Image 1 (tube, rainbow over the protein chains, first blue to last red):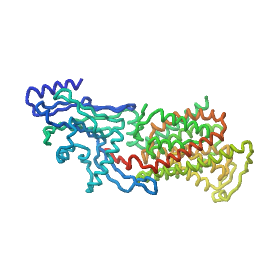
Image 2: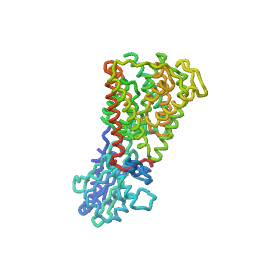
Image 3: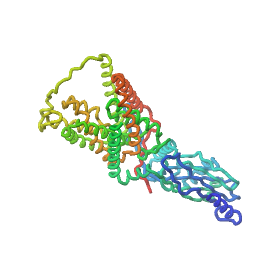
Image 4: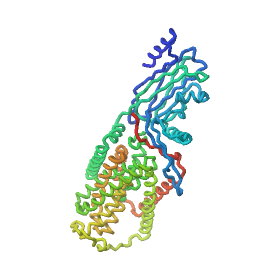
Length: 248
Length: 305
């Protein structure tokens, strides 16, 4: 019942006094736990904007997943066969998930510098690349976008639902393979001239529970122990199998 | 129901995985082959990263072959001395294979390497089985003359040892070499290697047929044991979830397979299996020549906390 409490809180904050904040958001569940057999999960955000500012403004919510150090390689056709090519790039800080929700799809027409400074949109995210070749960076960034899109890790299709004229709600779908860690939610209220009116940050912790995640952690943290466990487990399974074979 | 494979990093349909285990287990029960050479390419076609398919299949074979080995050991059909000599080569070979795979992972060519290895082996095995099954369908009931053990020059190399169980007095160099070759193959392709080891033991080493299967299983158990640990330790590519799910299907499948085998004509089923193998090979060829949906590879080097 947290959102209701919060909505009341927001309303009480915004209506009577002239609060300094023109934008407020909160997350329904700040601790999202994904279990082994799941269909993914959702990040649900509620928020409110100052009534006077609601018209003629653009609201943009960015959800940025925990970052990875990635290497991307191009494939090339060689003697009729597709091979990993020599051309590659490293992203020191690429988010593992990215989604945008907005009440106005025309936000892309805003001044490019504004979007770049606020890091709104995949193209404007600073992924900490040490390359000077902008064309190459853009082409690989686009490849990574396609990679995420195919796996449900990149969404532009989310809408902000306006509940009442100042209250809004947005949902972000996390696919089963979404990375664990802290997700940052950056909300911006921008006017039509591209001036930032207000911004608000939230964070959500996504964790995965169950055997799959424990196995993954073990395989990375104690690879030898994991291997020994895999091998001994297989021997035990084989022994049980042979005992069953003998009896039936 | 979808289940998440932690190391492969993707969700997969539980039903598909179990049926795959069942079908391959059925075939392996019927033909007495490990089934790795069929399972690994099928896993790759399901979208599991080749390096993970190979390593997890090695883990799966360990369980299956240990179960078979115990059965043969009870019947005393194992030449432990020959097995240990083969293993000397086998373990070295499997360690070499793991490091070879690590190198291929670093340069990003593991997929093409594993695919090409499979295409060659599947086409070779498929055509050989096709020829053999067609030949035996043609001349059913024609008795085959069993050759006695022939002494070939390989046996006369230095370091000769007496193998009591196999009634042999031969050099240890050929078995070490064969073990090495099969061990390498086992860890880079996720196969047990029985389909090479068994004919090699019969035709090259001249071992009596009744000890061949048990002894080759001894070698396969140890080699897959070592490669499971090494793959986990060096490459982090063994998916226990995947291998154990395959195992459940495979144990049941192998049971059914063993029973059905008694009732069906071997040549006809071998013919069918040969066709399946060739189809898998053709699909794999398609996979490497058709323009991929994603003409790039993304590797996560490190997760930033």
